[in-house]
Amino acid sequence: MKKTIVLLLVIVFLVSMISIGTSCKEKLAKEAPVTIVWWDWQSGGDDMAPIKAAAEEYKKLHPNFTFKRKTFGYGDYNIALKTALVSGEAPDIFQVHPGAPSRDLVNAGQLLDLTDIITGDADWSSWIEPALKVKDSYIDGRIYYVPIDMNHLPVVYWIEMFESRNLEVPTTLNELYEVADALNDDGIIPMVSMFAEKWVEVDFFTVFVRTADETGDLIERANIGEASWENPLFKQAMQSIVNLYNNGVFPTNILELGWGDCLDMFNKKKAAMCFPIGQFGLTSLDLEPMLNGEISDFPLPQMDKDGKLLYTGGCSIVMAIHPALAPEVQQTCIDFAKFLNGPVGQELLFDSFRSPPGSLVTKESDNPLFDKQTRDQNTMEIGYRYIDNPDIYQAVTDGVVEAILGEDIDSIMAKIEAVSQSVNR
Image 1 (cartoon, rainbow, N blue to C red):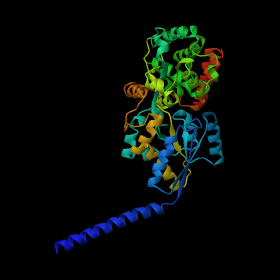
Image 2 (spheres, rainbow, N blue to C red):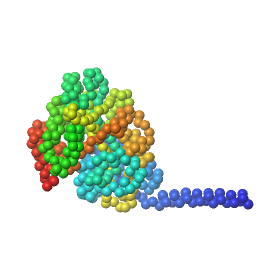
Image 3 (tube, rainbow, N blue to C red):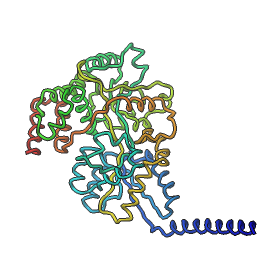
Image 4 (cartoon, rainbow, N blue to C red):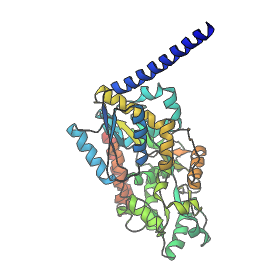
């Protein structure tokens, strides 16, 4: 009798397991086909190949999921996205600039508010905890995009070019000018930076201000009209960018240099330094010199010795979801974004970006420079990179170009202040 009962129980268990398995398969099979369209600007190449690998892993859980990715060169992306949004043909999930540059999209109702979705999910919010600590994860206190990476942006440099000339890593601009003199004497470009991509100009300006701003919020107050853009510290920051150019730190064609130009010049050792290169950009540098310890980094020098050293940085690759999607498409975009931030997604993204957005790092990097940057990022203050109002942001980038071309700094800052008064009246 006991053997019969046990046998019956085993049979019932097996039938139940088969039934459950069949039910799961039927559930997966019954999922409606969903296609999501993803856009990014990752150099028009395979920089985000792990994203496709993550999509394949996600598809194993959701067989009726289809992932369509379209990638652009950086210079073409913003025009293409703006056209698509205006025409009503927007992609489902798409890369945007973190922080202030996306404010116009938020005001136009083009980005889904993810605040309650992310903060209400204990797992998800814990995975991206470091990203949620930086200001550029928010617009007016709300979350409108998913951070794919988190990084800070130091200067990278060739160690041998410094050591062979007995040069010390500069901590102030005056020290940087001395380094530049020695490098220029030997026909080496001291520093390249991608000024053709306007965000870098703002990085220089904001980090100079923040290293010297004792109040800690001068840019924020000026952004809303409570402080003047003609403040002496703003003028000093703008003049410091000009001084970098006039003292030969930059090549004469700095305004024409894009990301690819700078990486090529640095990799070929035509330039001793490149700013900014965070963890997200290390994949664009030659790997062997980094593995051999030939390249290191340091914070952008401060304007004078009374300031503080400060990394600029934050989120780099962030993905927004369009709010006007069919419910099943929108939910799939949300689920896939969470998957990218989760354990499997992080593991797949780590090799490419080397900068997962959360504390969940499942394996060690083989790149000592990445590990150094990660340690620095966890121990040093990261300065907010952006000027929140898009009109003022544009005025500052225009002002940097005008200043380098020789326009009077006082006149430039007066124009920026006029823009501020116009938007804040």
